[in-house]
Length: 173
Image (cartoon, rainbow, N blue to C red):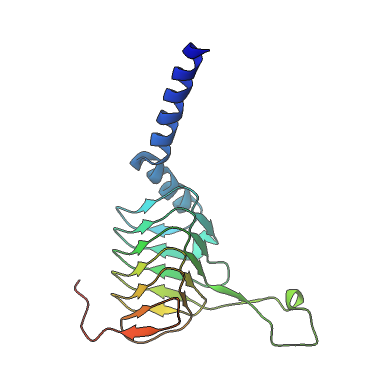
């Protein structure tokens, strides 16, 4: 039994290293491109990233997309700029349910889409949610667990407490 444990443990280490390797990330990037996503150079896509509606998704150069992140581009476009850091479990959707007609079930009202634009040098922290129609200006930070849902017109920090702190300086490129 001792002789079996060592090879199995070594195999598990190799598989884990491969899963998190640059090669595995490039396989995920190439797969997304085959599905229609436009992806720049030096992009890292970690395991467990879910891309829906890839043909409507564009990702710039030097971006990082953390594990468990979901991009939903079915009904409108998601454009992610250059040098964007997306942490784990971030949700970005260009789609929302219609729900204005109280005489109908929400599930029967369909969906509406609105483009999402994430500017250059943006950081989306763990568990952030970016809703349809949101425009994040270059240099914006969306804090852990925060929800961004509109265009603010200048760089800002969104926090989970719905505070918006406007940055009075121009972000460095």
